[in-house]
Length: 237
Image 1 (tube, one colour):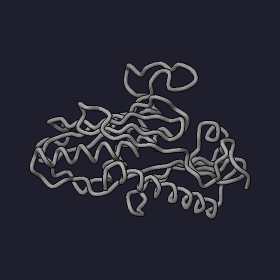
Image 2: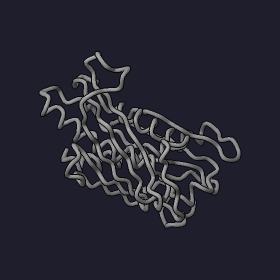
Image 3: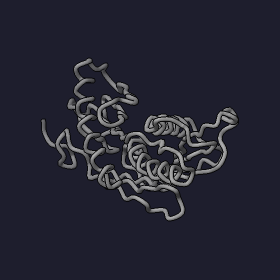
């Protein structure tokens, strides 16, 4: 198997950086880079919960996702009338993934909202958002535990990565050019140390065999192990 267009081997991540605490006003924040993809994740703690949650004594964690108008090669319109279908699907994925990092919601009637704003997009925006969002959420949960005198609800890190089949070979962490031409494209979310939270995958061409899926999951797990190490490092764990 030959090298990819950017010189990476098939099992290599793009350069990953996590910068913690970039927003001095938020209870948690992280600027995450997966190669050319850059996402600002901020976690805000607010009193109150959605209507269906009121009276339960429990908190809630949710996520919002947006792409800045010039995050890509051409300007896109702002979604002023609410999220479109793709954005709503990504928000739900991020929210589900981040909630899986919690041991429970016993932190009072509070909502932690993790905003994931894509500053620059080159593939893997949702996986970068989950990975950076987990760092922001970890700090927000610690803030809640300290202020409210409750057990820290954050139980374990969550990270995500894309994987796919490009030019007949399975590859880890697809950039936009690879994602656009991929025969198979998948996103894998895991909670440390080795549990799967969600696997989203589809064929863009020929159907794929179970052995190919297992190979892609192995690649994803290897990349996510690296991401867990990066998250622990930036959190000082």
